[in-house]
Length: 321
Ligand SMILES: Nc1ncnc2c1ncn2[C@@H]1O[C@H](COP(=O)(O)OP(=O)(O)O)[C@@H](O)[C@H]1O
Ligand code: SF4
Ligand SMILES: [Mg+2]
Image (cartoon, rainbow, N blue to C red):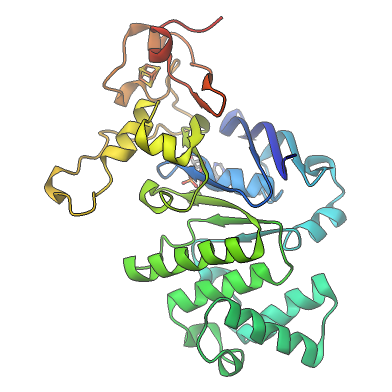
């Protein structure tokens, strides 16, 4: 099956500093790829680069092929049709993306008018259908409400409804549940899971919380300091993490029925783009680090047909030629 999205050498620079560096991954139709990493690893910049929404003076290089089209060289007019059309995005904070002075119905109707040419009562009926698709109770009444009349969870459902207005083939969700409390978080994830199964769209789920992806993602890409450090099918990554950073993320997850006291966080922080270590960027925090780790940046080393990790521990602390 050919990929829906194919990313090669994707790099985002602000001046001399790369905030996303040499990413390569692909997403098959209907597949869920989770992009995971602590705050500051470059996840949001990756999402914005895919949508071509990197703010100036940021520069994007590499290749992004979506549905057979070379996105980075597409004229802006065509890119605008893809954005919110076949590729849609949901952000962390729904209040900042919804306009407070318009009803949720009129905001969904605007997307429907722009991308599907619907207007008047047809647009309103479709807005109500979308609100019920995202399980908003009493959608016929809710469609006339303003964003501030809705709870955070309901606003996120509205954002998802807006994203679905154009039948996207790929939904990019950047920390869609981070601002919500745990119960609502679980409900929104259930909703996304159900919509993905019903609508067959591919999803890139971006999160700092590896716990969120375990029963949703097909594949996981772990990012650290602008680079992918491990990629693997989700089940494999959870059962047997290949990169010490992934291992650390897993160890810091609270376990079901586990002892919260024993939860241990990875010491230290993600280095900022202007202060990267010379060799492996994780070395200052890595319990397996040895002298060779600090010599050169380890490349992603294939560890099987579907997995790779950027750690030289797998090659006896030798860089592969
Ligand atoms: N407008 C900007 N100009 C320069 N650097 C930025 C800008 N916005 C974010 N960054 C930097 O880019 C890096 C990656 O940020 P981001 O993609 O938001 O990380 P994440 O989403 O993983 O938390 C961070 O070091 C951040 O400080
Ligand atoms: S390359 Fe070395 S420092 Fe980096 S993750 Fe592997 S063992 Fe740790
Ligand atoms: Mg982010």
